[in-house]
Image (cartoon, rainbow, N blue to C red; front, side):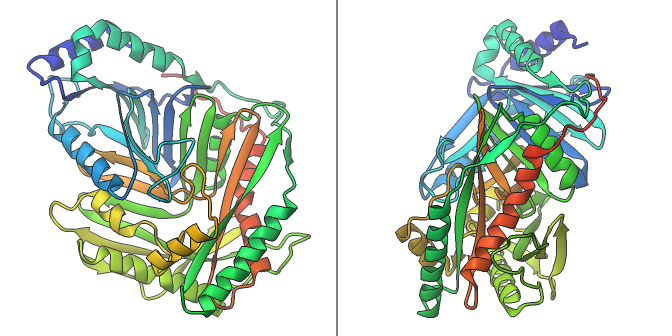
Length: 460
């Protein structure tokens, strides 16, 4: 049971002598994690099964929304401003960042500097209630604007309401039927993808670009609403090496399982994935065979991404290290070439400084970047929500973890739109690239069709 009177007392004490423009956080340890998600409303979720980290944010104590060429600088300025005026009570009279796990913001942004509907183009959100589970060590961070703490009773009432909105998993049974999904046929869209692929190869042959990444979508309709919690659980169970994430507002949820780390920062250490080059298990009806990862096309596509990441990091990092050879990352039916590139950020370089240099990598846009983006814009490339943008978190200590928004979909009641893309270089076959996008749709399709796992964890 939560000691709400004590939490209100801690908030009131923390608010004394605090500037109205600051942010306040009260942290409460838990004996065990709280599992579950709201059915509706505003919430975020982030999970890295391989690192034992799960974060769920409920509501918003603060939102920052921006767009345009300076969007990363604007998010960086907002986080720096918060960091300077953010007071934390971790219990035992501690009230400084560093004595407890630092307060945290969820962040996301679209592929291009404009667009991104139905989400804002770029957003930073401080959750009002943050449920954390780090290798079984659990706590709740309650946050509010310092100006709101003048009415501590109302703030605590909102925290209680948000926490009560979490639908705790009390064990599903295999007899709970998953929604039945029907895919809306889109033969003209498939033909359009093949035509754009041929145009991309012509642009590459003419020397305008070395690589172009084309995307497509698939629309699904279910016989009933698709529970996001079930899909998230299935994605985590089936993709333990991926970042599992969701961003929700009202009845819309953008979620996915990304194999590609855009950026991880921890105490100045920087890690970025160069992920490009794909093969997959063949399916009946495939329009073209899967290539080998040893193919020259796959290796050239991968090397372009690795070189771009190294070039982006070099001005802001010391000791940038790129493995001589890529490793193979296997994810169910898909396999990718991956290099994990590491460096050490120079003093005063932030996560958003690095993201501004890295995004978009050739893995999601093309190369040279400016020419590729111009070509995509001129040929009607459309990327809804934050597909091929970034999503993740950044905390008040300067650490961050962002994934490229891949293997994802947008749920809205009984409808879902899934997204996939493929990179074109000299020698690409448009039909083979179309088959690759079909293979990349399969993780989300499988998660939405998954039968519920049987779980027996109760609320703390």
